[in-house]
Length: 137
Image (cartoon, rainbow, N blue to C red; front, side, top):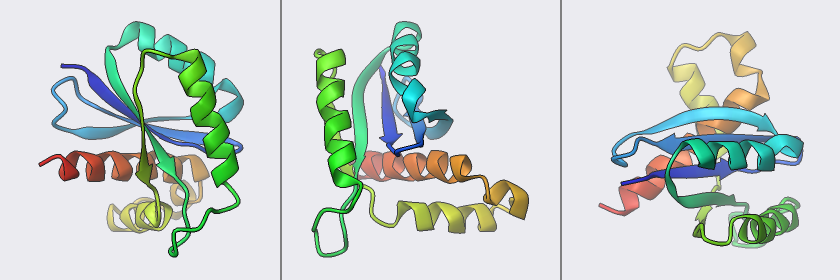
């Protein structure tokens, strides 16, 4: 089997999470400056076998688009262009940043580390990936 990678896309930073090759466990991978995301992904795909890219879809509670929706849609179009053989699937990202912040508190993470937005992005991507994997059961 191959890994699944999940992308919490942002204007400045992008959080990434991946499964293990057996697709049993989701773990945070890293946070990348968004301008470096495509070179990072190209390199990662050369080193690891990935079968699916999940991208967090920003929606409001009433299903309407957020301010970030056009950015994410443009990113998804570019993904399809840069990696035409790689399937891309959108997943709901509502409340994942709040859930990530709460998880960091529950894990006992120091306040200084919780304030690093990159940590929130990675954990949010991990939560989305875990939810996706759970939906497959």
